[in-house]
Amino acid sequence: MALGRRKPVKQQDLFITAVDLPRSDGHVFFAKLNQLLEGAGFDAWIEKLCGPYYSQVRGRPGILPGVYFRMLLVGYFEGIQSQRGIAWRCADSLSIRQFLGLKLTDHSPDHSSLTVTRERLPETVHASVFEWVLRLANERKLLGGKTVAVDSTTLEADAAMKSIVRRDTGDDWVSGTDTEAKIAKMKDGTTHLAYKAEHVVDLGSGMILGAEITPADMHDTKSLEDSLHKAQIHLEEAGSNIEIRDVAADKGYHSTEALTELSEHTNYRSYIPEPKSTEGRTWSKTTLKQRKAVLANRRRAKGNKGRKLQRMRSEKVERTFAHVLETGGGRRCRLRGTEKIQKRYFLMTAAYNVGGVMRMLFGIGTSRSVQGMMGGFLAGYLACKTLWLALQRGWGAPWRPILRFQRHFRGAMIEFRNRSEPTQIARSSTGC
Image (cartoon, rainbow, N blue to C red):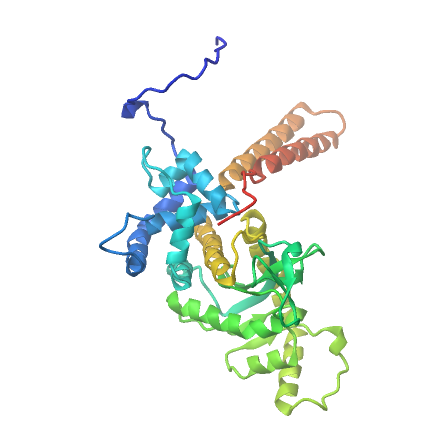
């Protein structure tokens, strides 16, 4: 092969034939995802839902609703935080442009168009997309809902601590750039302006049934009942007739008032561990109903079923946070205000649920799963080949083939992990 020479870039041709335009074979994951969405009639459904929010007689054509929501799905699967980053990725990748349904001569939407579309569509439309995905999972018998787990985490707001100013009343501090963000301690021990995200997760399937954004200073015991009610509404809108029955949560959700409110609903049974600080408590300031609720929860939480649910909770709920916030790019908010963040978060959790459906149908749940599958196949092939050669050649002592197998397998797995790491995409420090 001869060495080529890079020539200076001259003025491009004014006319280019369709044969000369670049083409892409497409991305396997996004091609399968498009197949799933089109087969379920997503575009026709979402255009009918969004129709009342667009003018029918005046104005230039906006982004198609199907393109808008697909771009937000790309943001989750590619781990992009900001809308600028999403717009850049969609404009740069031929396979993603094919996923969006854009022609080679079409301009992909920019970040400002995403902002206008998000402000035009209310929160109920984004919640309906979240429920549509749950309906898709329910039709494929993936959705349970009888036993759920609840947990929350903090999201870093798009506002700096140095921007806080004193309120006129002198009661509290408030951010000058994001008035709804609250001062909170993050998971890594630092203090930031933040919001709180609360997940209600089906312990049977791992699907997210509810994802609510609340102020960071709202205690978990205050938001528990509302999150369960909204998760039940999402289930009903998804066409499921299952009612939430067993509720598992960590010690942060334990309080006499919260347990009493849950006991008033005949279909809720709580499995919440009791903090050590409440052991040996006195009941002089509590009513008989409150005492019965606390003792019944204590008995259930200490039983075998309660311990089992806690193990499942720590596994499956934390997994949803890892996918949505860490690999999905949702830990740092790029929007300001609870309503705007809630709209984006509905789509991120909907994308997580879509990944579960994709994993059941096609064996791949994220856009990087194909690389992982190839890396795993390569590692397994190299390990088996090494072991076979070792046994065939009879290298020295009987344990040497095993040692060589372990060494080569470890090297293959390190190469697999390096290939499976999420690609760092250029992200903007500001978002719309």
